[in-house]
Image 1: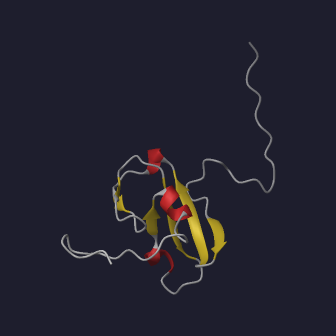
Image 2: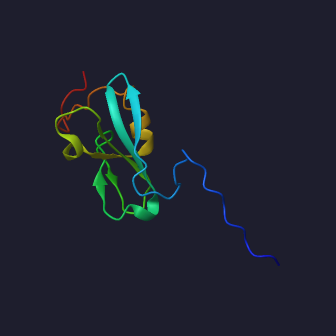
Length: 103
């Protein structure tokens, strides 16, 4: 068996295992810095702002924050990946009491 050959470094290509592969996404709700978090790096539980459910430790998800806001990284929020993709199709979440009418 021959030894494994080293891969050639291609300029302009991002390393796949980089900790903060920050991407920028433009949407109708503004410009966002978006970082995918693999399950192996998700070590704490978070609360998803899209569905208000807990993102358990070990679950892959997305971290997003406004690209051009005054808060910067203080505005980071952890989202389930499907919740992040559906954020523009959802209406505001209204919290109602248990016996409140739905109309």
